[in-house]
Image (tube, rainbow, N blue to C red; front, side, top):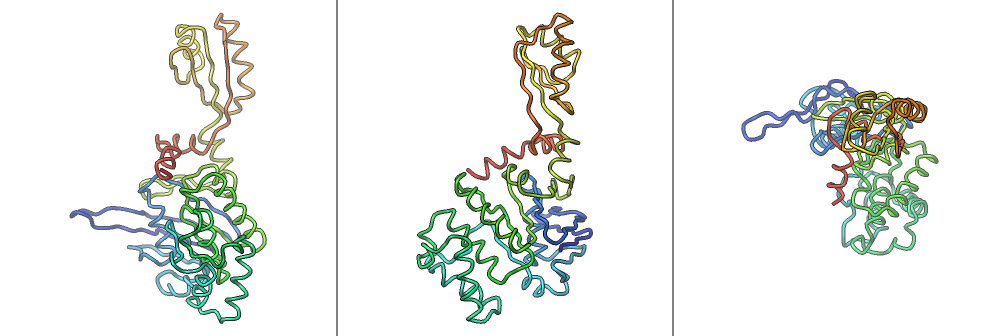
Length: 315
């Protein structure tokens, strides 16, 4: 569904060249849901804009939904849906009218457009607001309208650029419930950027991590967590002296009277460590075991927290 080879975009800013995306290679199979993660400025949105023909690449090639982004941008646009970070619907227009207009823009006939709009209004639970102005809707309702606008022409591929940023937890969950259901019933391929790591972890078959314009990891969430992060075991001691002695034996990070150790299979290692430390006269007074997260993966790769980036973006 998407194949890119050495896709690159550079800009000129204040007399110097800025490398926004460098030698990007990627391949997305039909029906996949791929999450594209990275901090602000990593090149995610630039990549999406190149793949959707909104921004010409400096070099490299890509074929999207069977069409070359350079030679046939109109073909790409006719086959994809794109939901950007801003609200798509005209604020003073009614929801149903916006869907009808979008269908016309896509070259659909009037009868087909009306039928498709009714279908999306029903599946995305927009019936009660279909005749209201977009500006009167809640944030979650507006994002569902955006999804409907992106799907009106039945695209085989849907790009979602941070679709749930700024939504409250209930609206986020509701939006993703609809997206997952639509994907299940239609087989639509989804390529999304998000700052919410739980979305990528729970929903995506693959996770790609981008930093400084380059993809630095590409695998399933489970494989990335196991290979790059590992479990996190925290041990608390009665004194900083005991903690320092334990850290000398086990390694890890020492902070006051506690130590934190990253290890594969932490649930297996934890009881063994407690026994060994007790035999050495170092009593563990409290212990916790935490499975790795995608934020741990990002920290391991870049030394930065993507969760903090996401919180800043939401704010």
